[in-house]
Structure formats: C-alpha cells, structure tokens
Image (cartoon, rainbow, N blue to C red; front, side, top):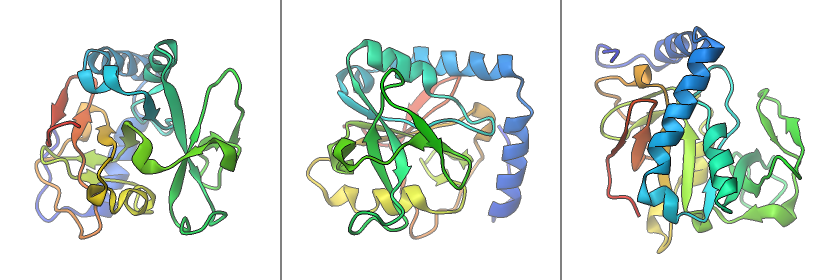
Length: 208
C-alpha cells in the first residue's frame, strides 16, 4: 500500500499512479483482470445483477473485460459510459450509459482517447436503473473515497443517486497498489460502496 502525506496533492498522486499503472506488463495486467473477475463472480451482488455498467480500460487500468465476458455468458445486459456531449437534456458534462455487446456493437474513440459505443439514444438506460456500476479510478482509500481523472464526469453523473428509491451499487476497480491511507474527499465527490482489486473486494457500505 502506498502511503501519502496529508493533505494529498491530487495532481502529483494522479501522475504517480498513472505511471505505476503504465509500468505493468501485459501479462501482469491480464493476470490482475482475471483475478478480479474470479473474485467478483462469487459475489451475490454480481450474481443478482441483470444490468451491469463497466468501462473500456486504458493506460494500465484494471480491465473489466473478463468480467464483461462472464456477464454476457450469464445473459446479463452490459453497458458502457458514453460522453453525451449535451446531446440530451440535462446531460452536459455527464456520462450516459449505453448497452454494449462486442458481437453486435462497434466502438469509437472519444476526445480523451477512450473507446465508447457510437452514440445511440435508443440503447440508453437511466443510470438509476442499472444494478451495478464498475468505475475506473486513479486512487482510493478504505472509506470508499475515489480519486478520478479530474474531469468530474462520474461524480456529476452519479450525483443525486442516493436520493433515488432505486440506485445501482457503485464499485470501484483498481490495482491494489492504488490504495492510499486517506483521501480527503471534495464536496462533489461521490463515495463508492466498495472497491474491487486483483487481491480482494471490500465493502464500505452494505451492497444493495
């Protein structure tokens, strides 16, 4: 575990963590992704979920692709985040979630170099109707605080979900070395229900 002095310099932390992720070999990345899949596949929150949102990994992020393959084999619906670009009301600066199956859907590269489905409003789902959202992150702590890339897309997208009668379980995915002792949250940061790494899954809130 990497310990950082308080207060954490978020810009420095992002740079260091991204460098460490990129230093992983392809074999290490694949092994970590498989271990994370095995851990999550045993969890009731995953087994019960019918609609699961994931992400396309880049820059050494812990890859949810093995999880997606398992989910599709179990006849679950998988979704990926898409930058809406304000094409829909009240979505400026937010993500929308679009159904995805690698057998039938194509991907495009957005302005951040991230792969996402071609925008199709017919395949979208309200965020609150998802059962489980797997989110990427740069760093995390044991309280469920998440440091993202700094653009705030996930925080803006997930804001207000706690007021909904139905909301998805929010599970961050990261390599175990991305854990720090304490991450002071900003007012707009959305806490996670749990964290999945190649070593473990731990909950910070009771899963839904």
